[in-house]
Amino acid sequence: MTEPATSDFSRPVFLSEWHMPAQPSDSMMVIQLFVQGRGAIDPDALRCAVARAGDACPGSRQRRDGRRWVDSGLAPEVRVIDSR
Image 1 (cartoon, one colour):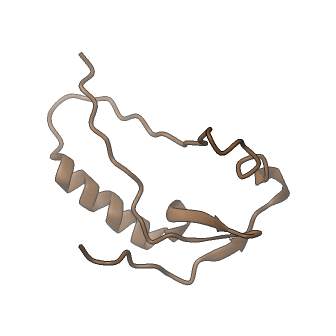
Image 2 (cartoon, rainbow, N blue to C red; image 1 turned 30 degrees about the vertical axis):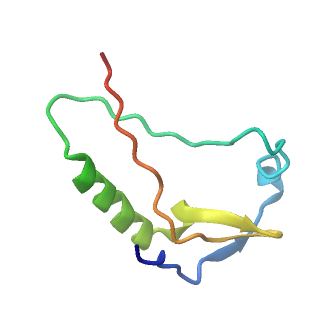
């Protein structure tokens, strides 16, 4: 497995965002995107597209490092869920 590609992305954690790292360690703040439609999307092709989008927008891969957000280099997770 190859190491994640990181960028020089970095920005301060804004005052309005401090509620996220202040959450208890056993809880998780998650931003989810739900796409519903007809037809099939190849999960591996979608994961590749999400990884490429993360390369173009490294802020979507951010993690906290002290008082700053930095690029983790890890693409957001893609999960396929059967809607039935």
